[in-house]
Length: 134
Image (cartoon, rainbow, N blue to C red; front, side, top):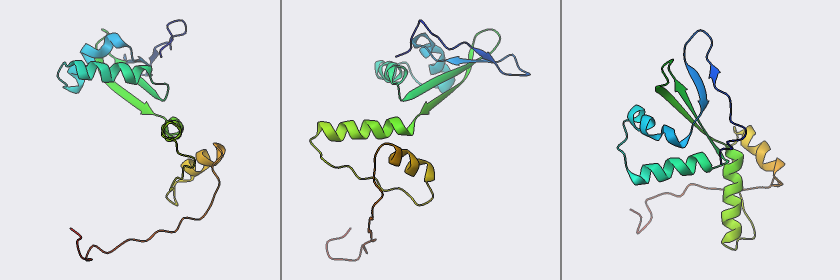
């Protein structure tokens, strides 16, 4: 949740009049205009969830008059891993495995740091010309 006691100060982008700051609930009407999104209760709930999610950050760019001219939303992978782990625990799973592409060293390192063990995963691609395949 955004902490009102310690808000992120707006930062002026060098050489411009544009300020960047953390997004707030009251930004939604302007963001709807910037994104071309219709005003719906569903969108408002979605935006509130994003702002409250510790695994997400939303930043807005404002022109000198305070109009929002851009938005950036970030999702942190480690938090997504933690989310998947928690969901698996709630469903009674006792083991979680991750298949990591060979070139994704960052994700591999994040998983190892969370206690994942490196093992062996064997895979094959199945031909779709077997009986009953669509």
